[in-house]
Image 1 (spheres, helix red, strand yellow):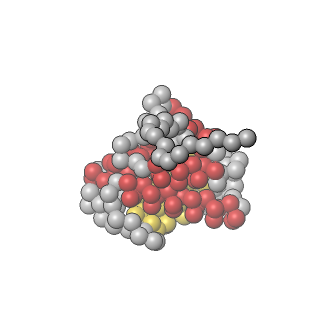
Image 2: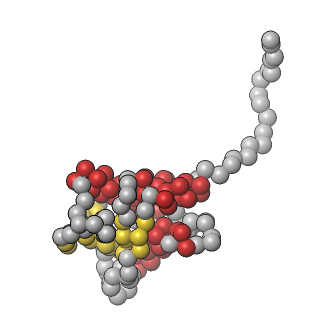
Image 3: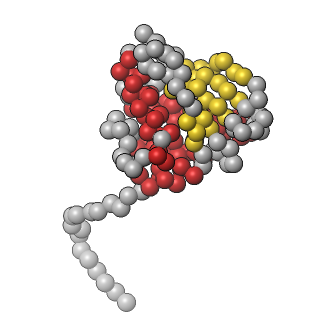
Length: 167
């Protein structure tokens, strides 16, 4: 059994990133990952993700969920990340059934934390554990994601009580 892992690359075109931005982005990434973990049915807890394997230049890190998971959970996690990272490429805009609207909001917050930067995310193959290629997101995706949970709501029903009018 392997853990769920995600490789993150902050600000890939530039050398380094401002600490204040990095802190905001890492916090948003943690909130998003914790939300996805809840959606796939794994138990979430504070400090459930740990970062390791840092590299110089643009910040590289690997985030690992601190629990042993099965291949199905890893596949669901990867499909959630793939939905978000390939969002611009897709004609279909419906998220996987297991994703909660809360997770869409967390991903939108993650995108909003990117000013002029991009964030690369790479999942790991659920069976072999090999890293997949990086997919990059930026702030522009946030607006497209927000459309998913800002759809018009139709209400059918009646008003209880009395209706009054006055001038």
